[in-house]
Amino acid sequence: MLKRIAKDPLSHFLVVGVLIFIVVGLFADRTQTPIDNNKIIVDQQSLLTYLQYRSKAFDPDTFNQVLASMSEAERNKLIDDYVRDEVLYREAVALGLDQSDAVIRQRLNQRMEFALRGLVSGSVDINEEQLAAYFETHEEDYEVAAHATFAHIYFNGAERGWGNAKSDAQALLEDLTQKETPIENVSGLGDEFAYFENYVERTPDFVASHFGNEMSEQVFALSPQPDTWVGPFKSPLGFHLVQVLVNENARPATLDEVRALVREDAERAQLQENMAAALAALTERYEIEIRDVLDGNAQ
Image 1 (cartoon, one colour):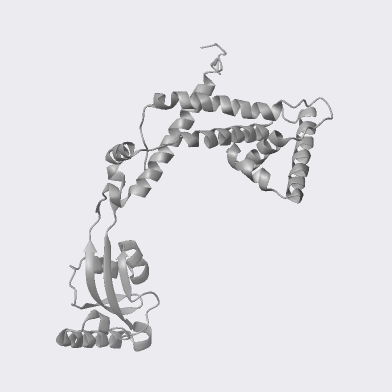
Image 2 (image 1 turned 90 degrees about the vertical axis):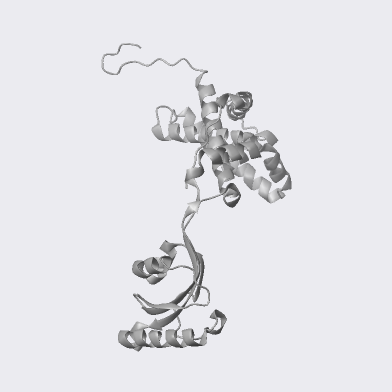
């Protein structure tokens, strides 16, 4: 049951623009400290920024609270970590290790993407109208799977012998049918099964994982018949008498049935759209020249 949402990217243009300035400012804070001297300034802003990068989450209010709630020992440890990272960073830059290094380039790209994602996530807001529109567009992606609710009585083929297990199951079926034994009075009959006696709203795959494909197909071919036992059905473990209470085919879901999942999908799609818009806006800051790699002619 998969997902995507289509919305007008211009609807978030102003928000994305503001977020870009925030991201640029955040990165500027990281690089404003001169790296051509031996002074490292440790202040609240530098520690706040460091915490956010380290956590890969960008929420100044939350991390201000985290910083304020730290004990003296925790704060000193944070300062030591920051100074260590800053020293290594400056020495690496001084040695030119950041130049033409694919690994560092990838890491910087990832950090920039984390910064953008953390900021644009705050602009994701799906209202009921948008939720309904998303569901209508993607309705075929959501369904209520086929499922059955049933009870069974198990006869162990290995312990009883396969012939005896089947005949014992047939004999009990005749007795249950003759006495019209209700389902609540059959507990303890038959043998102990490795899994469950009762299965509630289980899918064909789940039933097959316990009883085998052949028996699963047989169970899902039955009509619901409360108070009626049928069988015996053979599984890899033995024979079973079955009473089916519910048996429903797969069907399209209603919005109310999958509301939480639809909201999660719609928000994820909107986040992806906002990310794409933010990256597009950043790209607009650059002049892009594409040259043919074969003849070197500029396009």
